[in-house]
Image 1 (cartoon, rainbow, N blue to C red):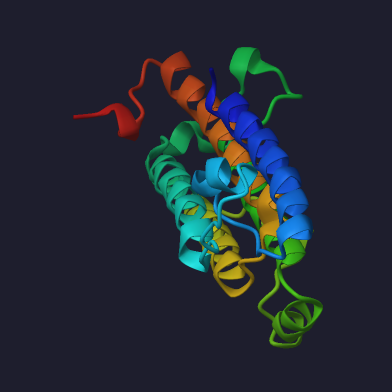
Image 2 (cartoon, rainbow, N blue to C red; image 1 turned 180 degrees about the vertical axis):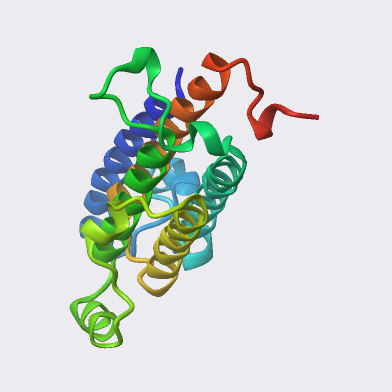
Length: 201
């Protein structure tokens, strides 16, 4: 099973767990429990309340993992291929730089949805919320690396400041989307007879 399929399955499980626990909460007055307590909740046994770290830590760990792998590729991909190589020379296929900037734009967009309106307005007022067109514009390799790093940092901060489980689908999208496009980058390495930094010993 691919990581994206695994994350989709996880989302379905979480949603199913949520429905079950919602029914249990309605009948017993209990707060929603953690997934690991599902068996006890569904058998009408008291369940412990899930804490914020239990909810967000696995998500933040996964985001940090894909961030490190993506940034490593952004810093390492050869300069002469960075914004020129396209598989089979197809002009409709993104370059490595365009893939990386697309990831960054999606991350910044996800962070925006996770934040509260007040948080978003404060960032805009402080000039710290980049416009999508600016994120997607290729300037240089160094600038691309900066944008990718900043985008993952923005998502992590948004989740830490807003650990509401209603945003779970967005959190999982960040992970699945990043992993999917990281796979593109690995293919670009292999197509050019290169070894991705994450595969080197």
